Length: 227
Image (cartoon, rainbow, N blue to C red; front, side):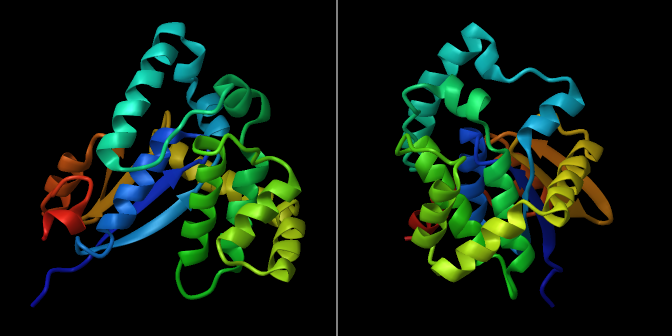
């Protein structure tokens, strides 16, 4: 008899390039490991404020390291990260609140899985962290959503929904749940094993996650490793 599937919640925000790495790897492994992956869009700004943490971009030496680090990681994980011309403006002045409310709205309306959430999230990452495009304006969100396969009518409804109290509260709850797991940044993977939540921060803990859930880490490209 097959062992029971482990639930892994992945808390993320598209303003975070490290979240993109964690997101892509977990999506690659969702059909390789015996897991149920639950995508949990949340707001990184709320995590920073709630935990008292300071973003690496605000620490000069960390910011310089991050630029080099992301270049190496993009090659290793095969994720097309190319930092925007002005990362400070993209991350801290513009931010991602409207984008994450939009993703939360997509999740609220999607039925039978999370393919739309996955695709819209990926398109938003592509805009900010690969194409140096805006993710704050309604037109930007519309473009990303339609590229992800949503219709113009669906996008119009989601834009309205994303500004509702219902969705604002949904995003706040998700962010608070991450804080309840003692989050101080994203990505945050919460593995539910034998009735206990095991929490992993960052995009460099996949070997430990695999060990925790009794699976095998086969590198960032498990499909290629199987060939």
